[in-house]
Amino acid sequence: MIDIPLSLRVPPQGRYNRGIYTCYECGFEPPHYNVVPCMLGLAETPAGTMVVWECPRCGQKWMFHYRAQNAREAHDYAAQLLAYRRGDPDWIAAQRKNKE
Image (tube, rainbow, N blue to C red; front, side):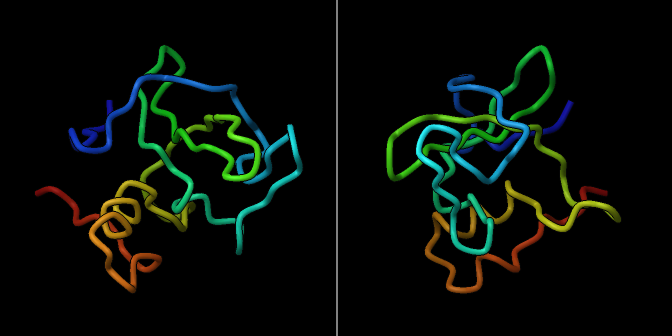
């Protein structure tokens, strides 16, 4: 299980979205396909940890599987959301530090 910071935990909500970056209700796609500004947080579900985001155009909530940054995953949504909420101007480059 992934250690989710308490400030990022939200209840599971919305519909599962394999398309990740597209709102299937209204067709919205965030700039550069980055949903961090639209994220509500991370939710634990029986299917795993999910990124929960809300479409700013129509309000539909969506979920997709969260994967921490690794060799195959370019984004660390948890680190980026924390930096975005702090107002860090370089939030898109934020990555979590490995716990030793």
